[in-house]
Length: 412
Image (cartoon, rainbow, N blue to C red; front, side, top):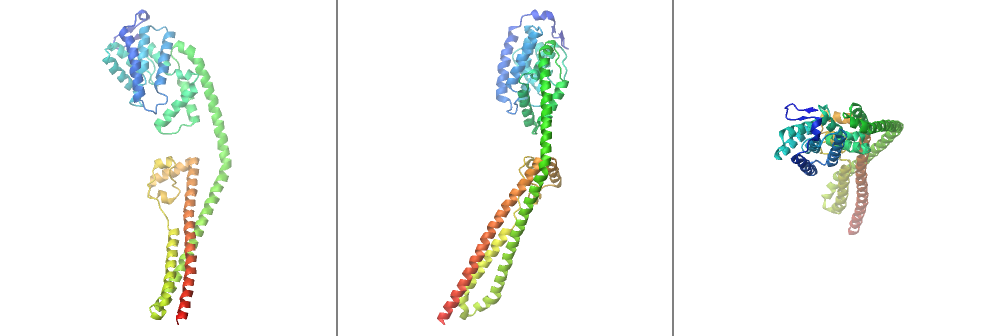
């Protein structure tokens, strides 16, 4: 028996014999059209589980349980209308969608002149689908059982995966298989079917799914344990690989800088000698033949110096690194040129994130190695050009001096 607090209506077994008002039966069809239209047009694409298909499953379950519980057409209509609206609140909010759905249902039913006592019952049925709220009467028991009938579905694990994906996307976090299976087992332990027909029909299938959940959880834990042991075995080798490779790259960078410094020093000496020894002689008209070779020598020496400086000049990023970039593995904070604009709190958070996430740490080391390789490629490419310029300059300068002295001798 159902008695609402306002004494609008009293449902007894005798009411099961009452014919359903045509207007209430019509509301079922209008509710279906209204809800499907709203879910198809207003529902966020992030709702992989709470969609039209889920609502249709709940509606079918409500009708089935109501029939098994010997409910009359009047009670079944109230349950069916409530089932159509029970998740419509997701079109506006994610938290507290039950109350929002009840409000939408009230506005819709009032527009269609549904009796206030009927609206009150439907509202309470929708709100009763709140997870933490226990049912207060027989109809609410049916509603609760229908909303959770997926735990006894043959497609339970497919439905569960879509729910996990929905929660992960909405909360912008990853949910591991182990964590998800544990949450499901905890839900199974707390969940209970309220109606006798649901216990009889659904409980055996729920127990089978519970058993399969335990098996999957155990299997996943064993797999993770094996992977962890495997990573531990490989960890030392991987760390050695990164350490040796990074050291080799750093050594190569030091060699490149040393070569650039040698070129800088040699060309600086050449320019000094040219300025101190040759320029004073050029001022004499008798030594005008030295102008061209001296200019060639100084030109190539200056070019070599410029190229040497370019090969050793560091580049620092102007991008401000954020926590979101670190989470998405879009940067490497192991290099000072990336984190120098970060606040100390963000940098400490980023380092803790790398320490706690081995994959993120290896990703950062890989990026560090990759970008260090790009820097080395630039250094050695510029050094190669610098050595070529220096070699050509020396050859051309010597030849020009020889030609100048030869021409000077012939003219004399």
